[in-house]
Image (cartoon, rainbow, N blue to C red; front, side, top):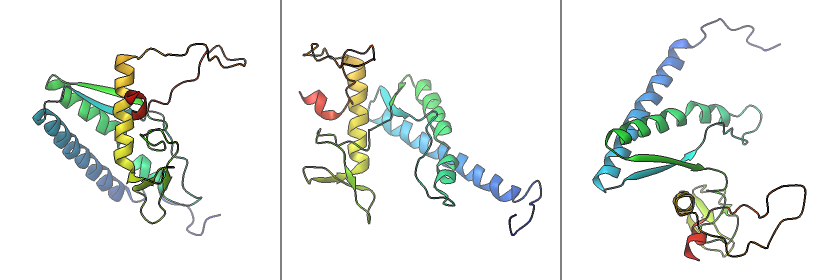
Length: 179
């Protein structure tokens, strides 16, 4: 039994409503600024990660990480960006999200995040970059790889096993566009 006893039906309703409205206003402002910036710079497509169905794995029991992620209106923000940019004649594309921020854009493998500054990513080659910049490079590369659909050079490298796939899926990093 909890120490506080049973909470009433509409416990903290006004606080939750206020937080929800603040999040909605942030979505409106961010989407408008992003669409305006894209229109100013002549962009014809905005590429976003497809976060539908994504659930955060992190957070210890009792931490607020999952609640903070679900409080962030990722779907609402994507919807507003799509609506506003398509109104201007642009196109919004979604790419698969897995591995965009955990892999280095230069193909050196997984990145290691700094404990003191989580925005700093260290590659296996000991280069240090902003983790969000590396992820945005990988998101853009996934879009271009999805758009141009490059031909694979070596189709003989089949993967043995019960799967019907004949070759491994490429992770879609910026280094794949360089080669």
